[in-house]
Length: 277
Image 1: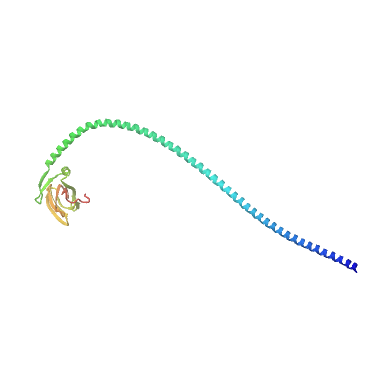
Image 2: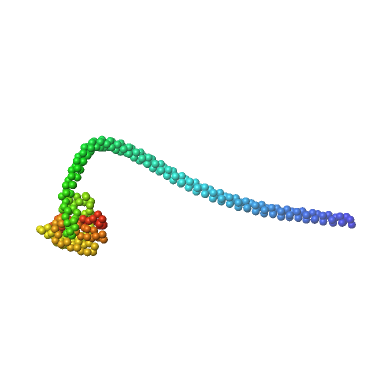
């Protein structure tokens, strides 16, 4: 009985060992499979990172090539620009040198001309000193002649019975009166039928009789018309005008057919016209 029991127990022992070994083998296979899967995942991840790194390298390489190209273009452009600027500077330097040489030559010429002019002026000064004596003599003669001409000027009563100032009978005598500066003088030429402003009034010639040296004209002053009828040559014709009642004198020195010439004299205090003819 004991031997049977012993013989039957040995096969069971082998069967258990087999199961254990089988279990170990299965576990080892499962572990190996898991490890293989883990390693495969790591490899895939590494390959992805490697591919990404390669793409980044390609981008960097492309950007580097583009930057190099731009730098080359910029370098070429800058080189050309510097070359043009240098050329311009050289041209300006040459132009400045030419100007300086031209200015120096012109200055030398002007200095020579100035020296000649100084010599000429020195000679002229001597001549001027000689002429001054002659001018003084002429001035004395002129003053003497002026006094003589003033003595010939007449003073008479006007048509209003007021004693007039000196009367000029021609243009030269009128210039003497202007030179004295006692009154204001305005010359005029009137044609028949023409109304013309003179000083601060207006005059209109109505009649001119050259044969008998008589004339008739009208004076327009202060919105009034004053007729001066049948007046004579060089006769002082008088009228009052203005808010200060200034005495104006009119003298005709020349009478032609339908035309007279003369002047109006006014006090220094009288208004001055904006424009005179």
